[in-house]
Image (cartoon, rainbow, N blue to C red; front, side):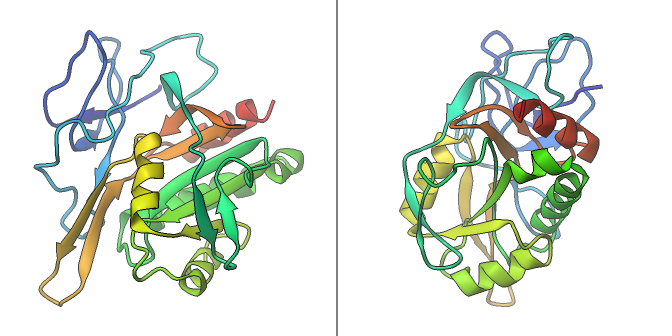
Amino acid sequence: MSWLAVSAGNFDVGRRVVPGVVTRTVLGAAVAGLVGALAACSGGGAETGVPANPGGALISGIHRDSVFRGAELAEPYRMPDITLTADNGAPFNLVTDTAYPVTLVFYGYSNCPDVCPLVLSELASAYAQLPGPVRANTQVLFITTDPARDTGDVLRGYLSRYNPSFVGLTGKLASIRAAASDMGVPIKGVKRLPSGGYDVGHGAEVIAFRDNLAPVIWTEGTPVSDMVSDIEELAR
């Protein structure tokens, strides 16, 4: 059964725009919902009190005949024409340097203690299960929400734990926030810790692009088998 994350706050069923922090739930026949999860990336779980409608997504609703198992967008996100910096130090334009038919984008940071390792592990598992020709046409981008600490070398070492082909991107925080906003991903900012460090609140969804349009996203907890099915469909 398909599922979406449902907002802990108010949502407008008529427009199917659902803001707020989310929790996971199984999708019932009467539920049409959101996508726009805000991950606290800390042991305490998701934070509350986020700004109005961060990363609210317009979802197409529940379609029995949908080819996707993730959350299908009524209006696909368009890849923003923004240049960041790849983990090898080279400029990386999100439009011109995503030459693969399928591009999967996830925002996070290397010091994230829980959500990011889980999602990256699931992406690595899905990637490994793809048929060879599909895998060869699929690119995974990890865009840091913590560019102050995530240098190219840090990102390269971090992503190599999951799959050496995954590409890490960093850059100016303003550019990262602009790209995330265009993809419906909220970045809340930092939460100071008693240890002197900080956590970064960010959306936990994976945005799946076919060329430069993303018709489907996966919220935290999407089964790996659903990711594999959707990637194969995107690669057709």
